[in-house]
Each structure stands twice: as C-alpha cells, then as structure tokens.
Length: 487
Image 1 (cartoon, rainbow, N blue to C red):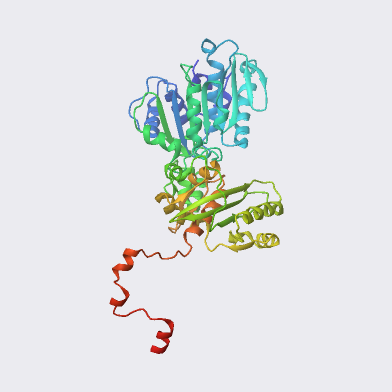
Image 2 (cartoon, rainbow, N blue to C red):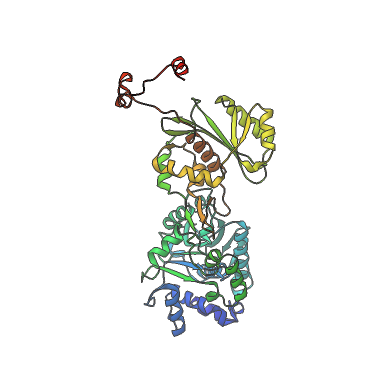
C-alpha cells in the first residue's frame, strides 16, 4: 500500500482528507516524492511548483518543501513519518537490539508539541495502527516493529549516535542560532551519516522561506528547476497548497508589510534581509585558543545592561595595538540573575584593567549609572545606536584590524547578525528573530569606541625632512616670546 492509498482508506487516514479539493496539491507532492504516477492535473502542479518538466520515475531520497505559512507542512510531515514507520520494514538493516529512528526536528518545544499531537492522532486514533504503539513518552513513540518516532528541537548534538531511517526537519529557516553559526548545516552534516546504512532512508526538510542564506536557500539554488533524480525542491505559496486559507488574510498581510508577506505567504525568499558579515571574515579575526588577555594600556569598556529576566548582561574590554584594536575580555551573565551582583562583578573586572568609566547603551535608563557609580565606575551613555556600532565594526572585520577572542557565542552572534532594509530605504542591523546579540553588541561597542578615539599624528623623520630644515623655511618656527613681540 502506498501513502495515497492510505489517505483514501476509511480504515486509515481518509477521515482527515475528505475535502479532496483542498488536498490536491499535497497529493501531487506526495505522488512526486514517492515516485507514483501523476495525473494530468497533478503533473501541471508538479511543473509549477518544481520548475521541472520531467515527471519523476522513482522515489526521491531527499525533498525540500518551501511553502507559505498555514500551508499544512507540519501535518503532512507527521503523516509521512507515520507512514514510513508503520508501512516499511527496516529490520533487515538493523543489528540485534538496534532500533530504527525517525527523527523529527522542530524549531522549539512549542512546535515540537504541535507535531507530537499530529503524530498521536494519526497513530492512536487509527485502531489498526494503535496496536503497533508499544510505548509513548513525552517526546517519542516506540513501535512494535523496532521503529521509534522521536521529536526534538534543533540541536546537532541530539542527532548523533543512532541509526536513522528518516530525518524530518520542520521550519528550518527559523531555527535558533545559539549553538552554532549555521545550525541547519550542522544538523544536516550530523544527519546524513546517521542515515547511511538504510538503503531507502529519506530526508525531508520543510520551511517557510526567510533570508537568502542557509541550507534552504542553498538547496533552492542547487536543485529548483533541475531534474535531479535524488533531490526534489518544491516551492509553493500558501493558497496553492491550502486553498482554505482566506485570500483576505493574505491581502491584509501584503498591505501591512509586502516583503514579509511575500515570504510568509508567497514562499519568496526575502531580498530585504541579508547576512551582515561572512563566517570566513569573522574566523580570520579570531585569535585561536586565546580566551582572555591580561591587562595592558589604554583599555576601554562597553556594557550592554539587562534587568536580569530577558536578555543577558554583557561586558567587553579592549585596547589598541598600533592601528589595530584588540579584544581583551568578555563577560556574559545569562538570566535569571541579580543586576546588582552583576554590576559589582563587572566593576571589579573593570578596576583590574584600571578602567574608571564604562560606556553603555543609551536605552538602559538610570539604574546602570546609579549602580556603577556605587562601585566607583562612571557610566557614560553611548552616542551611537546598535546599528551604528555594527556598521562601524564591519570595515574593521573586513580589513582584519580587529583581533577577537576565541569565544563561541561571540562568533555565532556576529555571524548571525542581519542587515534589514526598511520600506524607506534605511538599513538596520540586528539579530534574527528569536536570537540574541548581547555579546556581539558589547564587543562592537568596545572595539568601535576604541577605533574612533582621537589618534596622535606621527610624523616620521623622512616626512619631516621633506619640509626642509627649519632655517630654509620661508616662515621659520618662532618661540612663544618671539611671536608675542612680533605682534
């Protein structure tokens, strides 16, 4: 039995697909994915959503779904996971005692719960399949055929050490970026070896599009419109996949923010959001295995305050070396924490570097000034916005004039910064949705402040001689008394 037959079977999944018109595009996708014959209408949808002209002759081992919001991606991913786990036999490929795993990776715990609810309904509300459920826990289902369906969040560390028969990645364009600069690539690199021993393994990646970067954009560039026998890229707006979504809702979204709506409902990658700086540029500025530098001369410090509940509170210290700026120390206190205690700790570190004042965010209010003053440190409000700091940091990174510490969160946060263009044409630079940039902000503040200090003009002997000896000058240098008597 194939999946389309199971969707039409009253004893299996038919109850969820009674309105065939709203599922027509999904049937075309599933037919293409599993190498099933396409009807004339399905072939037309296939060509429109893939940019390909030749119908598939065999199942794909890898598929990328780029669809608008409310298209039904998560439910279809859960359906495919249940079908693969219940209707295929992986036991010939397993070692004694080994279980095959279908791993579903969601953006966060909330999305993971939604997928778990779909899985639970598809498994337990179908009597024929409910008998296969051996054990259910908070995040997985063990089946009697030695298959486990597991739902987790986006961490590449959770992928290793198991045999996977399928990897299902949901909303990967919006995965958190705290663990790695490129979490999507890191997870894919861990997934593919885990699936290597299963001949009919399948990798499914689905998301609404976002910026023109990352694994989703890379797959779209490589495979969309190309007749690759192994990899399918399917892109479709929301209403193509789910006509039940009201057009009025989409029209209102386009009126509010055309660029965001084109991505969220039109399945178009955003052109107003770009990566701020490349990973290679940042890595070239990192002093490998240097985690902190001892006190030197000419230090400056920048603090990004926080109230202790939402964001981290961070501090960065730097000093000059010739025309370069060198990062010496970074501190981050993640919530929850006591702001008073953190200020006391930061003040002690500042004093160890002989720093009597610290520059900080202008939007923090009065409390940082008052608390730092208690500990003998003057708090000076920065004249620059966060976007200004990042904008001024970029040429320092590109030219290699900034020497950074080997600090993973700093590296990740700088690399994941985004440059966004507003409707009026003004650029802003900030962290992605759901991410943080507290460490990067403090470091940018310290380095930029240091680089823009008034520097002495150094005149070499050769440059001085180019002006000629003093007695040869038309206007000789006079002493103060001579100048006074002259006037």
